[in-house]
Image (tube, rainbow, N blue to C red; front, side, top):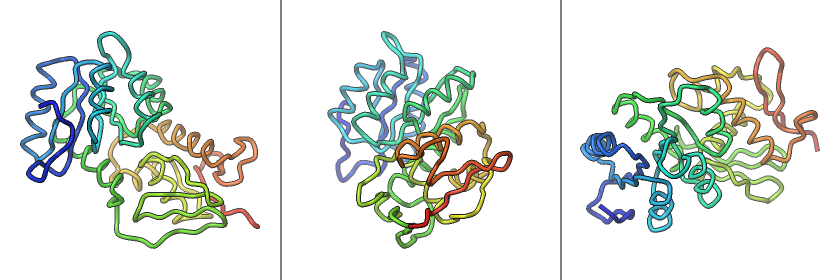
Length: 240
């Protein structure tokens, strides 16, 4: 399969799988296709970027160890041109690698070896978030000059649209729905992911840091996202 765009008869979800291990790529693609996920496979970074330019994908499954370059470079380039959800697949167990992937714009990670069932669940969760279906429909949220529209997965600040990934939007939405309340890392992970599945605390720290940057917050004196030492994070609507 070389095309990245689904026709009317194709499954609803289209994934770009970037994996140089041909056997693993074949097994993974076969499983996902049996569960109505259309899969386009790219064996290296150059092929992945070429496919991304040609087609429209609902999610990118990205291995970090690629021939001729790093998956982190691919992640950086993909995020610079698109807000497509990026799920990192890596054999690297070090937290630093996972954090770096998130800092470059990835939405989630899965460490090899992983179960195909868990991969499918992660894909479905990312696609739901990207399509604004992560939870029950809600009306727009307005906090001062910050506005979030869950239906379109868009956020604006003083009329300027914020370039958020789907994960960043859902994290900001969860905080905005509970503005003024302190939420722990564990609670944020549970609310945004939709379950209490295992994750590492620093993933939330990374996403919060990226949100602060996009909101224009000063980390030392944040206007929006406040850290409550030892407890968690709080979104506070500033007084106007």
